[in-house]
Image (cartoon, rainbow, N blue to C red; front, side, top):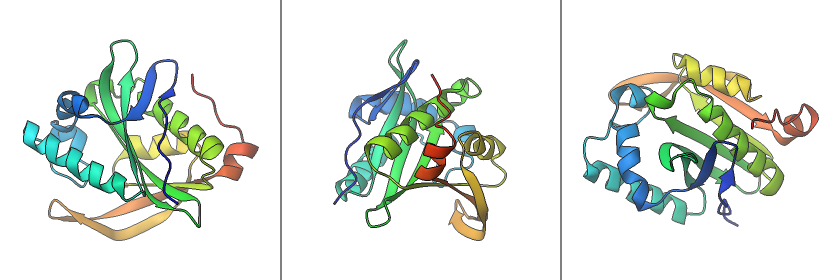
Amino acid sequence: MTLPPLPAVRTTRLLVRAVAEADLADLLEVNGDDEVTRYLPYATWRSREDAAAWLARMEALCTTGTARQLVIERRSDRRVIGTVLLFHFDEPSARVEVGYVLGRSHWRHGYAREALQAVCRHAFEEMSIRRIEAETRPDNVASNELLLALGFTHEGRLRGRWVAKGETYDTNIYGRLVEDWLHHGAREVT
């Protein structure tokens, strides 16, 4: 079985939905910022061709049935301000990983928390996901704090985990179980 497609998930301010080619102009602005891509394993986008190549990679990944690439759209102006990726879906374990990116001009407004809260809620309650994992670099303070605020548990540090952009780096691993979600509250974000 494959990871089912996510229907559009609405929050008070956002719509989290499947990526479309029409989103690439907004996403080029997000991923064309060196500060945004600083902690990410891919290079900063420099052109529309970079955006199109990324979309082709995401579409290919999604056809495997192990991933879903979503965008975060602000409902007030329908502008795409970031992305959420569910990936490495493992059906026997009902486990998936989550990754996310948000444009710098949208940092510190609660958008990432609101979007991720909605995606987690849908994954646990509608998709029967048992465990959601996330990795972030230890020096990415905002991302580490966000995962903790969302109720993820810091489960350890993987030393020398990845090599990207010519650098070897550690990652912090976080996990959230459906039991945590059900017993400790969903920490609703509206």
